[in-house]
Amino acid sequence: MALTPAAVALLRMLWDRHGPLMFHQSGGCCDGSSPMCYPAGDFLTGDSDVLLGLFDVSEGLEPQPLEFWMSREQFNYWSHTHLTVDVVPGRGSGFSVEAPEGKRFLIRSTLMDWPV
Image (cartoon, rainbow, N blue to C red):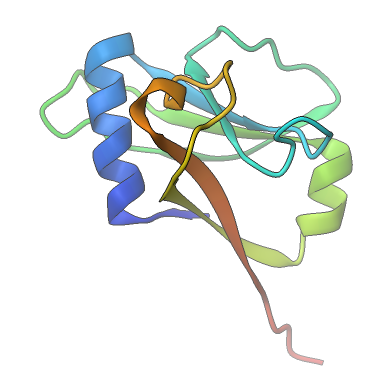
């Protein structure tokens, strides 16, 4: 997993405004293809979720990892891809903290080649 520089810049601004953050990617309807960004702990994860990684976007902020979670069902589809969180113009979901900024997070995926 990776973050684009644009995603890091937006996350730092949002972190400054909302405190520590987390992502969850559901894969369902209603913006299921977009990762949702919440204040850390506002989205309750469980056995049906997989922790894909931790990001450090704390430059100048209190160090705390930003967790990226994905539903286990969605992970089964994307387990052979490299995922990059990017930012594009547009309105995010009303539940995601970037929604009022006129930008939304987006996942870009690249199929990984495994030696045969």
